[in-house]
Length: 457
Ligand code: PMP
Image (cartoon, rainbow, N blue to C red; front, top):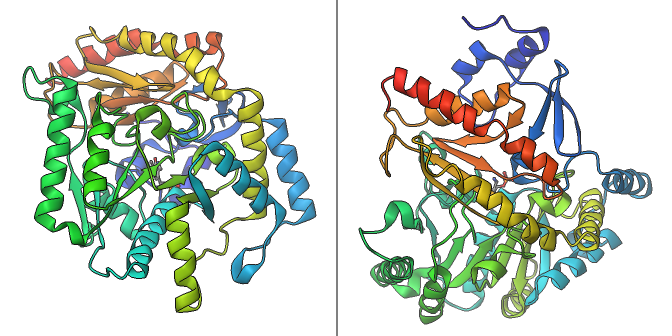
């Protein structure tokens, strides 16, 4: 028996279409209405407290209620609540934030703003196309991303995303977008194949894909340093080191989607620095403002910037830009967030917490429900399976059941299919980490009993 909906839940189902939600089930179960947040906790409208193990949607790296971010936002709203960067206008918050991004990402020469990760990646593809038109090679336009990569939901960024739900019933992907293999050693390696050999094989397959498509038609490769929404998959040893020479050989641009990995999440300022990726361009969002204000940015290296800027002179104007790209509120809060990351040395803090966080995760590896416990920095996942790398039948019931059990115990974690993802605020204390992990063993046991009863084990 499901409980009758509260007044707020009734208003919700009558007014909202929810992202990433089964609307039919949602009408039965009702919304979980969150009212406020403080530190690593959020409180719902029934007064219950939860530890936010996902930092919202991988974005609230500084937790909730940070006074400095709030006061910065208020001061900026009073001074200049809106301005844009079109037609050569500018404002100091945009300039200052771009300077700070360049300081953190050596090699990047220019910053271009949007409001979301999807818009950042949409911009990346338009820049790659614009760049190749400027270079006089209009055929070089195909983009290669990866199966299980996540790059957003607008038409091109959803096409880059390599997940079935983002394509099915939307007539996607569009043409000129191709997907190469997921660098997931546990699931993808041949028996006995080492991580290094697996990486070398994937790089070979990638090379063959470019050869088959025609190197003169391939513009760019886009990848998350650590795959996030595809299930938290860190690349195996030597992966980007093997991919990089293939990109160089075919003159293919490398785009790092740092929307999750940026700003300390992996223990470096950017994930590409930790994982050995050598990007020509970077997308960032989410933790850029600690999630408090929508803002995203693309940074490009000097070579791309030079070609693109020159071409704007040839065609007359750079015909791209969003009304809210570089919003002063987002830029001011982003600037303050970077100051906090620096002052508290958040990357070092993540490196200090990483061994204990990863040890805790891996302590569940022997649980009969856990196929793989994995992660890097303060990102982690438990992939649930009925045994080995087998998948549950049906897929995507066991993960959400576990997440629901955890919710009953005051912990918010996200089920991505049958994988439980972890991405706590980077400010989490050791005590709070204890609270995050406290109910996991018990909830895994409860889920195991349920899955067995349901005949899924
Ligand atoms: N890239 C990555 C790596 C992401 O994780 C996300 C969002 N989860 C996006 C892009 C899309 O960002 P948005 O939802 O802000 O459009």
